[in-house]
Amino acid sequence: MAVASISEKIYSLTGIIEKANQWKKERKKIVFTNGVFDLLHKGHIFSLTQAAKEGDVLVIGLNSDGSVRRLKGNSRPINDQDARALLLASLSMVDAVVIFEEDTPLKLITSILPNVLVKGGDYTIDEIAGAKEVISNGGKVVINPILDGFSTTAIIRAISK
Image (cartoon, rainbow, N blue to C red; front, side, top):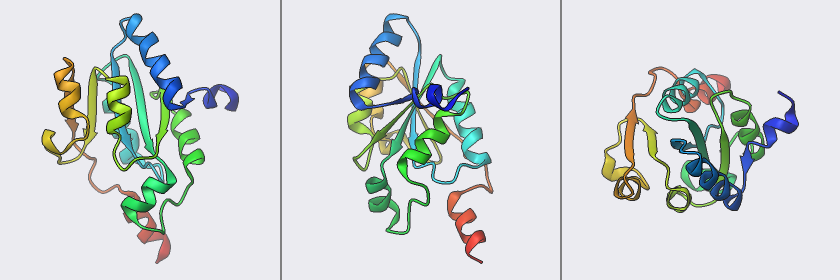
């Protein structure tokens, strides 16, 4: 897959709304997950593979650089949003990547209303942005386990030693 075709998987908010509407007309089950994905690792691949199994197309909401700084501090992200988006778009299980500026992907989720909202970790449904909206639209929320021993923070600590 050439870089041009990979970058075509990266959408603006308007673009992903149009694409989601097209997928819905085609009766495709849209799965949405989100995150920072700063230093891509085995845990991310596991999580995204699990999410992709929930439907026909996988959309990733990617925190913008500003959003990451607000959530994780000024030393993050390590990779800028364009690099992170390109890496995610290059993965075979990913159909679309869209960068969001807010601290949570609520606006993005309510704009596309996926069939399945997937979050990794030990969240409860009440803690997941967009869960209530997806469920009230007839969708479902899936909480996938995290692969132990893999985290961006641990990688950064190991590099800095």
